[in-house]
Length: 305
Image 1: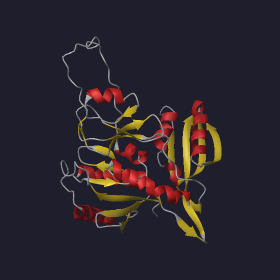
Image 2 (image 1 turned 180 degrees about the vertical axis):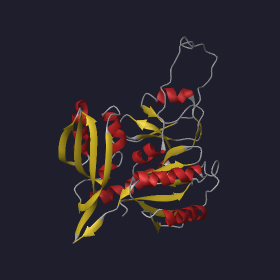
Image 3 (image 1 turned 30 degrees about the vertical axis):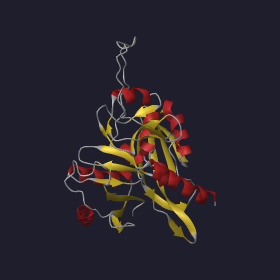
Image 4 (image 1 turned 45 degrees about the horizontal axis):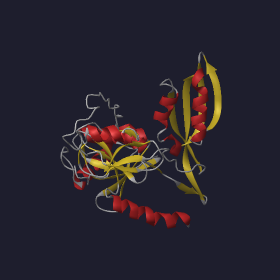
């Protein structure tokens, strides 16, 4: 039975149709309906409009494999943040609970236990097997989103994890939010090294020099917890004044590579992953800065109530 669902929709970014062969909602729907014939754990529902579809699957890996296959076949689309499928059982709202098994070396047990605690996990058993520790834990499916990458970072790539569905239980966790904000492009064009040098001091970049950028695209991660609008396409102003530091060598920090799996784990509710045969980009749902501020103002009274 599915435990996660995602919103599949057409790609409506300024770069839409530049690299994909199948870009319309009809073509995407036909491909999903063909997948239903052989993929028994997949479910398909209509979205809020004709350009959106709600696709449910067994987990992030299950849906990620489908998206990767579609990308390689030439499909171009955008997807929203993975959401847990909740159920009401005997009048109580419940969420799926998974049994997670972690095999890790002893020096990293503390980091694993801290990470599981932050994600709402309840450790059932810990035992030593030769020179490694075997941990079994009940964890909400919501807590598994984004856990793999953080687990590998915390254990220097030593952890081996496996999880399977166990039961539905009353909701005991809140929606996990990313600790850092993002850097959002304010102007279209090509990313310039001049702008990237100054912006890289504010966080980690996701794009490379001369890469085509559009307004509303997420170009990096902010070092703080708020979103920041930046102009990454600005060129250096030329003048006839000689600069004393002109010959100085400046090294631009390497950008973080965004894979499909990393992107699906990274985005928040107001963000989308743009998937094309050539690139995987992150973007805001509302590309316009003005529209994003209007949406934020409308949300504040609702959250207070």
